[in-house]
Length: 215
Length: 215
DNA sequence: CGGCAAACGGAATGACATTCCGTATTGTAA
DNA sequence: TTACAATACGGAATGTCATTCCGTTTGCCG
Image (tube, rainbow over all chains, first blue to last red; front, side):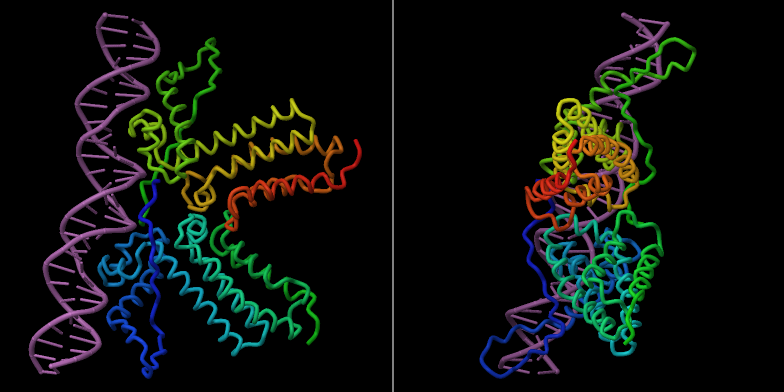
């Protein structure tokens, strides 16, 4: 009754569409124009940086400007401001999830897990307003929690299980609870200034080491 | 940097100022004009009802209208929209807290506690947007959590302890945790449709009965 | 009653989100 | 390469609020 515009029609990032098997007779699949893709990237990048300094409440105008683009372009890619926010969050979740593989390949199990958890903390910490957005009831955010479960949870799981298997952290804790706890610590109403989240998470990590069995 | 107007100056509801000890020589203390008080009440009442149907995001205009008042009047009483919201929440917390005494006086300990918890649930449940507001970081809401602790917690405590003393509920649970749990159940991101909160709370209440000692 | 501080109402202002539409680009087919 | 149509763009225009301003009205006190 006092809501902003409704009817959303999502927009998918067609970037990595290597699926151009130009053989059989399926429709030409209209390729995304180069400039459009360029602007989309610039937009997401700009939004990310603006959100960090001005919060997710920053005006669309500011984001468009930072991206060197007109507001019209923003709305061409994201029907609603909330869709842009959701897209940025998704992309950051992806980046965070991908980082897991890198850590896993370059560090010992425990260090990889610790590194990733701090990385994750950094991701959540810069999201002033994420919790608020999640609670806002805006349908644009509906899939975000599911996306979290789909991307971040498995990424964490891999590192966690590896550390357990290597005997570097105790085996009597539930991985899912840890991830949830970290997220809660970072988004709590009672969050107490900068560094608080990091400290709590560090504590958690130390706790994980306690009582580990030898490898 | 992209914030709405700042600098707040709170407004106190001078309603029940029975403190007119018109004897000694303290300053005349400018009495609140009758119409002002009337409008303040109408405003809070109107806001409450509008929030229920349209959410806390309802335009100030709508509230003013429902109260039969001009927007200017709204802002005379509440410097910022958020102040109005906070005032409504406070007033509802008061009502909820006061209900405790009534239940305590008219029902046996356990029934009084159960009644109050459902009353409390009803209070939280109608607050679509409370959680969001709390997380918004707006300074107008800063005191709300403290107010919650000051008003609701003791009210609950009284009923809870009485029920424990009467042996009607188990004595091995922490009251504070129960209240927090109920609030969390009602405001969670994972809240699953209407009735969900009530069901969970009912479950909790049943749980409290389990293992009670005889009186 | 008369005066006036306090309180009103509601138009004016300013910040945004979102929409519209004329113009500029891109990819492509001749 | 050039001409075209499909796509994208930019940014002014519109509409919805929150909040401010100020001329008017109203309760209160003497």
